[in-house]
Each structure stands twice: as C-alpha cells, then as structure tokens.
Length: 128
Image 1 (cartoon, rainbow, N blue to C red):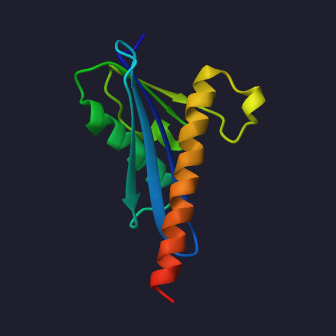
Image 2: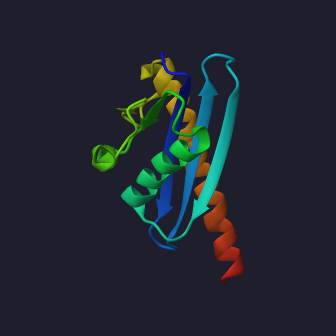
C-alpha cells in the first residue's frame, strides 16, 4: 500500500474561462486527511486535470510512495515517478454505486464543481 492516497479533480467553465483544481490527500499511516484547492485561469480542461497531477506530486514530494486517483484519461502522457501509481476513476457515478475509493474521489469531484460555481458567481458579479 502506498503511503499516500491523493484524489484530484479539476473543473473548468468554458464561458468565463476559469478553472479550479481540488485535491484530497490521505496519509495512509496516520489517516490524516487534508483538502487543497487551487485556482487557475490559464489552463483548460485536460491541461487543468494534468496540472492537478503535478500539484499532487508537489504536495507530497517525489521521495514518498503515493497513489493518485483521477478521472483524467490523458495522465498516461505524464512522466510519473516510479514510486507513484496513477489510477483512473470513473466519475459522476451515483453514490450507491461507488466503492470506498470512488466515494473519496466523489467528494473531490463535487468540491471542485462547487468551488468553480462559486468562482463563476463572483466573477460574474465583478464583471457586470
């Protein structure tokens, strides 16, 4: 088992061109859990998802073992350190159909969309 489990998801609004990455980090030794969010207005969809993987690597460092869970199919194009594993998750499943890993990912998926909606609402208020 990896020392860390990281769940990352990104959401992007095509109209106002803003994005959010949400990451949950679980230390499998201590069961400590932390959630991080990052705003990025320069990258779109898949690039934003790949950026989320980069952020995971930066958060934990390259010396620890970790499993990154993502719904991004393009992760296979990334160079991943040998002590990391990337697992593709099917997103947007009903809660009743999810296993424990998918439930953890689902929380990050919902959070990234919630944070994006909040940013879009703020953006629209400022730019009216």
